Image (cartoon, rainbow, N blue to C red; front, side, top):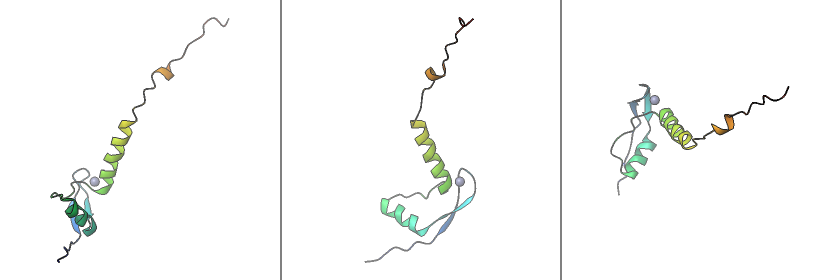
Length: 75
Ligand SMILES: [Zn+2]
């Protein structure tokens, strides 16, 4: 039995253009899942995109609550 060894790799984020570390632990995770492509974005941007997806799900319609009934007969 042979265990794979991974070394940290520096990648460039597709979104912000910054360098980020693809850690050996993450590489092992990707390998385990059978992913063949390295991550294109840094963790920060991946979290951001995740958060955006979640917030889009909560699409509140508040048009109705913004409607005010003006009383004009108060003289
Ligand atoms: Zn980034």
